[in-house]
Length: 435
Image (cartoon, rainbow, N blue to C red; front, side, top):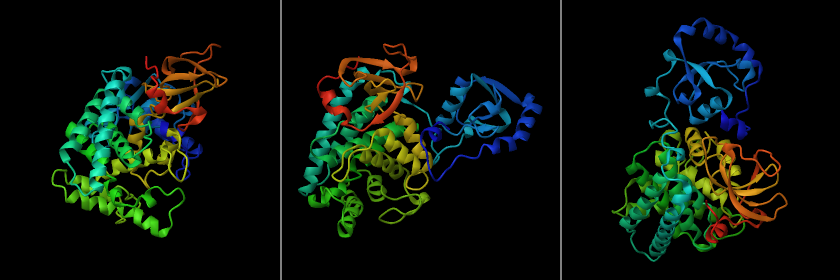
């Protein structure tokens, strides 16, 4: 519900409002069978429940139908935003049988809000892990170009450090994916995809071992690009048909490289081969359809697309994080698995850490971390209303902090890295105040 309000999609237009009137018999049934319902506080609402009555008329809510199945954390947030309590039907929901994507636990398990360590305390450790992993993957790719075999132990060590940091606080790692490397773009991209895939896996409730495995898959998904010429990889204009065909071969090259490496899990080869496949069958290289695409490949494909969109490319400028999320949402069910897109957005937040945001009053800041209110993160303010540098301070939008005029801070829009001359990496390296 919340995502559909924020991210518009041409292929899935809202139902006409007249449908609400047509659903009136449902409300009458709800009133007649009140004895089967239980009233709960919205904070106790969970994925898998069926809401049959609100604490206000359905007509005064934003919901199109009278009766709402809670399918995702987004639906929980949407109800919590409008109501204090609701009635749920015990005959129509079972938490133990809540709808799950690909047989996985219900969404929302292990969000960043459950973290014991604040992002301010984790950022230095995450940076150390990030730097070590970046150096490891850069060295690895160079060794592969020179014909050396992949050292699976080094890959796992780098990934394990990322998993440990993300378990402590995923927002710190999401923040660091916003720092663009000046050199070795493929290695940096691979590290970012690994981190984002692990963050998503954590939010899905996967085990530590599964988080490590998907991290290895994310880190090695583009290893086939070590066999692509630099002329094609770094070309600033659009690729011609021959160059595009060569670029697409990296999926097969990656599979072959990883199949010949005994020290790396076999599933990594499947992900390298399949991360550009699409549920609608229009991907490459095998034009697989939804059920034939490995789960980890679906996860990595979303993380890969998001990171690709949000970093500068030789042929275009970077998208803002929110614009990238909107594009993912628009392509759900076509280019990407629909349920997993929702999971990804829920795991990184509507305004992911590291996003440059502009407030309604003109002030500009960088998102530090998510809060329980997806639309109101914590933000480090860096520019005042006329675009001049200001003393860095943290504003918690979820606490309704106000500006100098007494107006509640609210995000107006987001910008891509480089807007207002802001480079997130430069601010981090210069000692951006975290607390």
